[in-house]
Image (tube, rainbow, N blue to C red):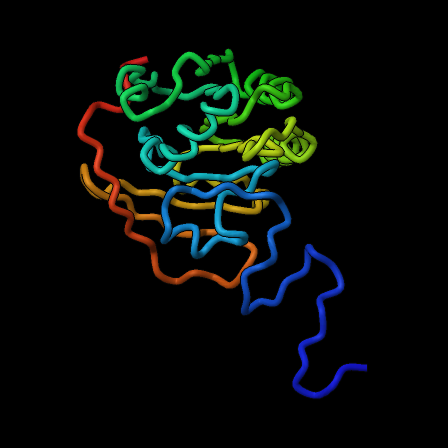
Length: 225
């Protein structure tokens, strides 16, 4: 029995009120963008879960992920699986990313890419795994989410207890059945100095207005693959 005016506790951590952000179901790491952290459950990227980032082809959400790439490379391996563009290593290094810990894997097809990611996520040295897919099937994302949830890393100091798993994909390409990823964002480049980020899915109420993040980038981000 609860008194009038007292909010009853929710029965399960996976349940949240529609008007509120959910309590984080996963450990989180800051995104590096205060405005974005403020609208995400727990205040950052969920670790041990898939983060979907939708971008207009052939762009990739490099600038948005810069702080996470920098932090992850200080902790362990950063693995890029199936990205259609080759990173500009000198520019990444200039932004504080430990490029000696950067791996790039180019699988022959998306089936091989998923298998590769599943194997990589069993390795405790992997801090961040970023995949790209043109049209990932729902079952493909489900398997990736299961692998992300099962991944664990030894925690030292402020280390991450699980890897950050990112799936980038072209905007407007659906799976035909939704997505199990707990967080989905659409990212658009606003010239050389800003990004527009729309929250497509989060554990909380819909976010009607997009975020405009100041994200200048003076150098070329990618080399031709």
